[in-house]
Length: 510
Image 1 (tube, rainbow, N blue to C red):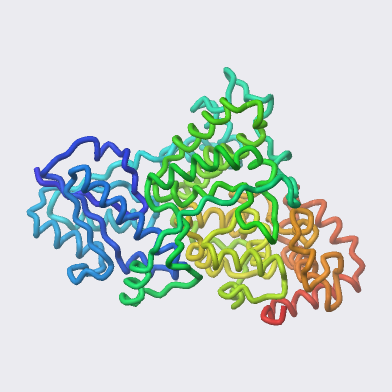
Image 2 (image 1 turned 90 degrees about the vertical axis):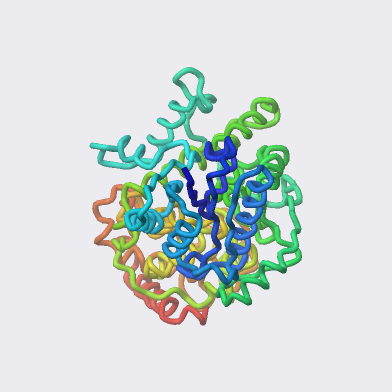
């Protein structure tokens, strides 16, 4: 039987059972499409990273003897539409059966189901063989429960997969070392120089320009720094274990003007394209930990495992439980536009200048920059979650909808009304100052609440609580903040609200 197998750009799993044997009657199809470059405006590094990783994967499959058809973005035979491409290739090669791996994005899942129903040949979908949990595991686990707490799901996953467990008890005597993972970094311990790949991607950049693909953000075409092959991804994992794991947990929430990556692994792109699987990442890190226990505290490894086995799998489960309605959630009824400086980094607020500027320069920022600086500002200024969504999905190289939208609409913007986060993650300048040095040389004073030099986050914070109070009055985790709001001097609160309105109406001035 002649089969056509589709491989999407985030399905670069060379260990998939599809590739265990060579079959001359099976053709693998990979395509660069305007459909994927244009459904949201992407960072240039994101498009280059995906295309280069896809091309490397196709070359690897060919070198192993597999029959691969690869259509580039500028191929004259590429109609840029997945349905047309599949119908053309099925007819051209007399294909008798079409097969694909289950997409991780809802829109592609629906599109492939529709295409499959329209094809004359039989169609079969396969698991990607990547995640610990299948699409429905979280929904089944929480069936009948009132709250979808990540912590309970995480503990179940730890037990099920025997990770950091001694019999049925957590290794180290506690499940979660999050309280130990909140240290402020200030020049010590020394951060090793990041592993750089320094690839010349000028040809890919030129191809995208000639094809008319619209992107944003910055790139140095002669020094592309992301892993785009399995070999490079494994190198990055090894580098993390040997150089960064020892302090990862302690400083995973830290912010610093001179350090973009701190002790973070930067493995998310390799994992989200499936060049690395979560299991081999966790297994690799655990193996290193167990042979270096005298130097690495369990809080470092638990903090890392929690992000992958817990948060990553949890967010995917939420995605498949809640889509497609999740994509239109706006529980707080926020409708303001995203400020222009999200596309330039041009603002006097030092924390946003660094976090957004880094995002534009590197197509990356770590989770506290995304959540407590950029996301915090977007929520406090009551920005429409659609606009926040599109920016996050486009700007980060590791952003695919299944992981981006749940983190953005749920964790960051509270647009789902508390399904993911038990309270909105908002703060005044105090938190940002506590976690790093962004406030040190800022134009504004983090200690001032009103006046021209007052940090905008302070006024925005109290204004947000006042304006959205009705949404939080029955939330026990917001009780303390609302009590403090009630004790605010009326005149001071009016001044805070006035300044907040100015920030929201004229973000370009701040």
